[in-house]
Image 1 (cartoon, rainbow, N blue to C red):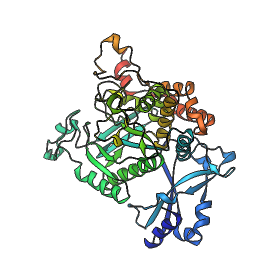
Image 2 (image 1 turned 135 degrees about the vertical axis):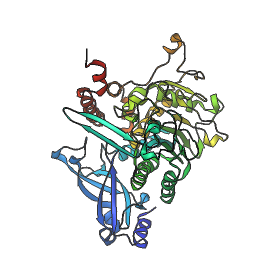
Image 3 (image 1 turned 30 degrees about the vertical axis):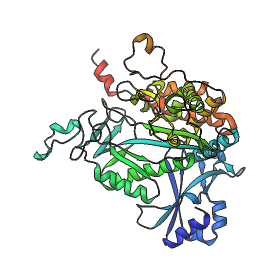
Image 4 (image 1 turned 45 degrees about the vertical axis):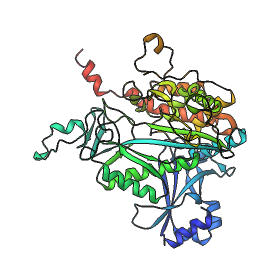
Length: 472
């Protein structure tokens, strides 16, 4: 969509406002709203100059001494917001540093743009396709509080296995999934059909093609909406829009949606499996005659991801909660191996009939990841594997959770904590710096920013510690 097309959308919809959105380091969207007349007064100038804002108010960004930043809207991202009362056209923005007119060093979308540019400059390929599968939970309600003398959370869900014994004024229907029993049952056990369909209807209206929706494994209404792949930046934009739609539709239904990886103890957590392939001149470079129909290029790409996986964890699994999901026996891909069949491996090769659909699927990321940063980092790791011909070794077609101890010791694992992941990123990040995609300043600032999460968790007593230690 060109500037002319975006202006046409504003005019024909009689939009009153234009909403400018951008994403911070953590992956949360922010926005500023301007009257539509300001855009229509001089569209070409407005799209070039954008909107000024205070970058020092965004966590992990500029200090107060260098706070002036600029939002440059991308006309190709325009859509009408489905939730606002007044007609409002939404535009996703790049964050521009006025000092040089370039994409800000710490702007996630600008980093993703630089990753796409680096792929082209490398000569390896011209297009990277990404297809994420962010899982999520929808609860009836949630309460949480933390104080000096008290900490607690409580999830309310009529679809939770724990709700079977609740009285509910004599209205308990009894139809709900058991622990690990939530995968794709029909109603009334699947209570989320109409909710997901409402989400899908809006996503399709926004141009985000949906391929499937269903209930997921976890009790308490875990769900997934599968959407079509796209190029790196576009797919990251769509992932942000998708999360926005899911959370707002749930809110309008009187419920609450979360992409937190492990909100429920003792059941499966939410991952974000990321499908990836690289193309050049209209040809899929991952298709070949090797294992599972892969090319050497695809195998080297896998080798790069496995080599750098622990450093990648700091970006693809950026929360302390992420590592409560990454434990064995909850369909969590903790083992750094690849397989065409084995879902306990961190890299899966989906079974497809067409060489055009040949791809690899990284299974360890989760939906707290900032999609711009995660996709860019995965691409950079894979490209390093291709450039240095890092072969991933033999595939793993056994259940990696039940290996004999001597075999198990030979298979590397993902990180066990955010602290470990940040240490890995500190030691292994040169592959991210190539082509100026990520910068050393970004690496240092990101590690310092996320170490605050580690510090807060380390200092907070946990309720389980009272159970384990109070009476000693």
